Length: 411
Image 1: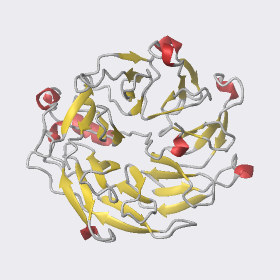
Image 2: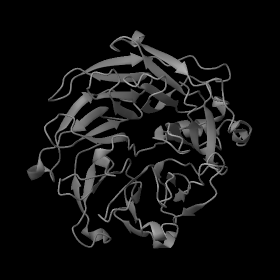
Image 3: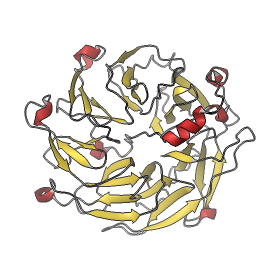
Image 4: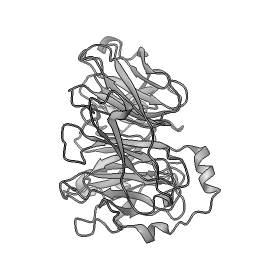
């Protein structure tokens, strides 16, 4: 399971501290999830709680993987404000909709916004990275439930968002990309020795929300696509080739517009090209118009939908994923998670998608949207093992904690 072959690995969750303070200033019913959990709306979707967050520790990253080898997806989560990480073990199909009570907790590593997973010591097991600098090596299935057996190294202390595990230099060993700024080369030997991990500068990114590995220009090597929130906007680092990979990479701009949140890749209009979808004040869809070379896009801005009467804020798009919902496999829906106090929704394509009028918004109708105060990115998983795709996220300020939206698989 390497990051350079899994586009859906979105490793990055974020917090807007201004919004968090604004939400904290309001009266928050931190028990609302108890009244609404497991109830279905008219669409059939329902919200299940893996672990609530009564003390506002701020779960902020969601990493699914079958760590204990029982065939069910477990979840490793970092807590931003709590400063620790927990690996929650899936209780199995019969109990999966209840709280997951079995977990291990790693010793405090400090404030942690974002995390990622992948094999960083080339032993076939999936390791864990908390906010870039803290690497936890998986001891193997037999010892995975003993946190003392997870060997830790610290590459650096400061925060670095969206850690991504991928073979950056093409030597067959996964490296660690951090903050969309730099990468650490996996050593051939003594991999659990932090001093052996050499750092190389990639470029500059102020506040990356999404960092994805893909050969976006079709020249045979992997580039790094970045959605940055504060300064640069959307761009990619062009891979300069193996001879120059340790030097800073050329920057190719896609859209300099600031203020975007998460981004997801996928073919949204069925033409075989890789498009991009970004959350901002509106939904921004970049439909690729060329087949090879430097990517060219048609940019479409789709307004947010009208929310239920119980929602008193304007929905702010944040999390995004592509998911088939209505039975048309050639044209997946674009699922949007609002940042706070609003209903999830999805966009459905009609026509060629080249106009905002070609996209229809549909609210997903799940109970008590206003009680979920601050959600993050959208993670596509099948937690209940029923063969359809569910949507997971973390909720930081309303007490919901780690949640998943159960797909009713309505045809």
